[in-house]
Image 1 (cartoon, rainbow, N blue to C red):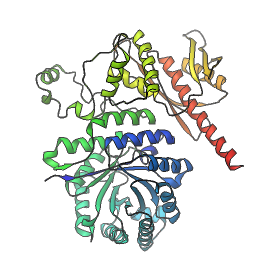
Image 2 (image 1 turned 45 degrees about the vertical axis):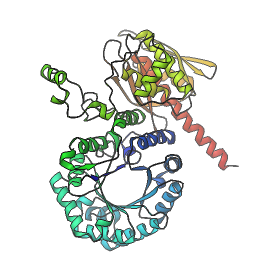
Image 3 (image 1 turned 135 degrees about the vertical axis):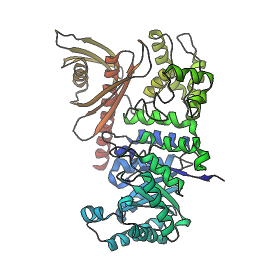
Length: 515
């Protein structure tokens, strides 16, 4: 009989710790809602004590996302735990996730604590959290490099204090699959009361083994896996949850396990996370990469046409990748447009649909056939959570090998049209400088990247860039167009709008606190 594996998603906590990623509360809420739709069991919404913004995001998700456990991370200090509960107490199913390191290297160099002090801290933290909620998870940071006997003692103390979930992290991605399986087996055999709790693993991908280690642990009795969508996270990232889920599904004959994840929502979730974090998914990424179900070799194509399973061990429909032949063009109506979006997993309000439909029609005038990827790009650009202070009205670019690149940019601010011209080292730099002159901002472009959303000479280009105004907070902007420079201008304006929204909210808070 198959056993259930619980899926703990840490995209919004560990995933957001990816260098260069910064999500606002609205973006986090949008991802959390999609994660709930995906069917994960637990959403780790953030680290409430780390910042006011993180606290507010966790609180918002706890209040508004139902049908799923919402967790907040806390160190073993009482102030962390109290702050986590303050954010989580409005949740339908709150979980406090408290942790402390257990490896000797962390005790000596980071914590500067003795083993007895760690045992006491773990016991007291779990008891404190248990006073707030019945669902308490305890993690032994850097467990895979810890002394096994001491680790078992810490886990026993946490269970005795009331922990309902015990998490064994491979924090620095050090373990190998066989080794990690033996380690988890030893914990199951050596910890009194371990059968009464959920045994979880949280693996990092420093050696590219996070998914393999997670599956090895499941094979010997771990019944919760922690990870992130697209495998994002600290350094090389976390275990990719979509890979774990599809491995368990595809090889259920081997693992004899199941999850409650709605696999058809995987691709939609992956795209959303990529869009809002600005982290592009590599083409050959397992399960969700654009080449994951692509076949170029003639032998492969022939085999797939005769029988899909010759070269596809997963049906792309299972992860939400549609192979529909319905073609939309400039003669298509709103009804067909809405139906196709719903098939792709997008449910839009009438206002959002109208905006997206106008964009679709404009694109159809320039592009013969509109693909599913085109539609996804249009909708994801329209579904903005930040108020649009400025929007691109027009642009004129003068550039070449013998002239100084110059951009004239016209922006709309409400009904007012503003325009400025500026020079730059290249056309993109000139665009950014012109936008800065219009908005009065002085931003630094940290990163710029482009990928083709679709194929062909009339392909949509998707520009993702990152800016900062103070060297601290980073804002991700995204724009799409068949014109790369127009996409760049849209992306830059999108990032500036996010910056301005934060500035306005900060001013609002300061005005409120001064009254």
